[in-house]
Length: 391
Ligand code: PMP
Image 1 (tube, rainbow, N blue to C red):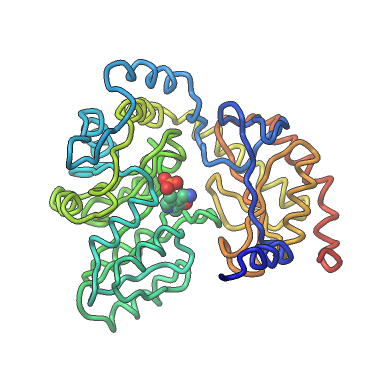
Image 2: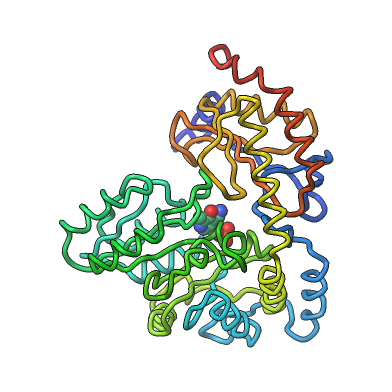
């Protein structure tokens, strides 16, 4: 048998071994991880809705009527009116004709890409797309061409030399860098070259745009511009699941063909009702979004002044670039000693030599929380200068 233990040991030696923390209690900025109280700057609960009292109340109220278990897949007998209502709410909120609910964003990406592209087709994928998009491309059995990150000109050149059905897929906000894809230009190039554009706005939904309609909504891009819009509900919406929104004919096609929709149990119906309550909070969440933006702006100014290197990001994802795995781990541990939880992100999640601390902000953070982070970063700054000795 393959020596799995030796492979794990090698990962440890390379600073690539992954561990899990045991969280107890609800997800909120101050949480208990492995029995220790820590101030967290690494969750995707961007609007602080994961434990919002009105969402918790909505879930409690929905339970007696809608019940807990999904019981079956949507096409057998699992498609509850709660799922239907949520789909209608999401379609209206994103300005799309219809929406289809998936159990997770991972499943949405696998199902959508493998249903819309197949053998003989070509999928064009940004180099920094999320793992679930990469896996969806593999599953589709289409030819996959990766284009340089955000490089619309090189994508256009690739599209021009390709015939047959073409699918272009991109993150709306890139999950590890925090930058926003050039969606207007991508829509134009896709129109010119008759390619179907799929945008996974997992990290933009709820956060960007005046009402939180995401990176696509922020630019006012219509269903004609972005025919397939994917959003996840476990991040800014604070619950769980994902959706795809677009023309009714496409949603119908996905119901027939997306295997990760067809062959999986429907999400607990009560959770779908609670997610409707979350969408209301997102829609009325301008105050949350402007507070979040003030945290982001201040962090960028003050962390840069401390000598940290940040990415060109205006979103709640604010990675501190470090480079070496060991230095990133050392920084993460040092921050933990100061009572902060900031995860070290290493290859293969990010390219080799680009390990980073993925700092993320939530509207549930206060400016006092940010003071704690900046003070701790100031105290740990010397670790970056010890780079050469770190390994
Ligand atoms: N797309 C992107 C860009 C993501 O970052 C993630 C998860 N981090 C997903 C999809 C998967 O979503 P989910 O967690 O709902 O499976």
